[in-house]
Image (cartoon, rainbow, N blue to C red; front, side, top):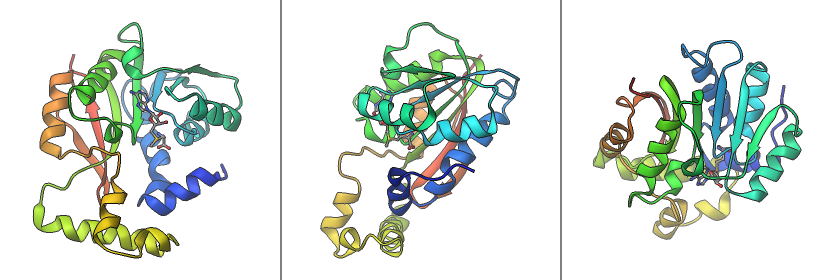
Length: 224
Ligand SMILES: C[S@@+](CC[C@H](N)C(=O)[O-])C[C@H]1O[C@@H](n2cnc3c(N)ncnc32)[C@H](O)[C@@H]1O
């Protein structure tokens, strides 16, 4: 079994469900018709320090994996963790990928949330759809903005409580300023907006497959 790294342990304190996120995401994609095939080509978009790659290696050593991230630092950390062999490493944004229909499946975990909704999210999703074979699936996990407003404050408070219970006293010690800090630099959207964006990008409606407070996982299929 893979041992979590320091980055992963911090993420587990910050993000409810993070400990299972990569395992769940890989298992979902591996159960899809196309990526389920032996030797399928799979894109890990925004691989960061490699949590999904570790799981993909463990669950599907037969996958032909392309690991992509624009950050040299993140890629270097992932390469060190995984070893260079057997993975096609690319320092690039998804939007910069050439070719279309190359992948049977893709994973995008906690990436869309950092992109502004000014055409940047749509460009990212369109590039992901283009990279997939028709019928190929994307597992998309992201921080979402709650649309059920009466629950919003409770979800935010619960998120602080989760972090406090995980040992992050400094973050969770006071009220309003902390809530802003939790989403600083992020651009979460609601499900209605996500649906509009993924449809415009060439995907089916998103099917929600899991949720932990504001973090939600969706399965999307590229339209044929
Ligand atoms: C919060 S990290 C998540 C890393 C990993 N997926 C995980 O869950 O541990 C987001 C990653 O997305 C990468 N990223 C940002 N914009 C991207 C883009 N347009 N295409 C691909 N990756 C991108 C960042 O460099 C960063 O490594």
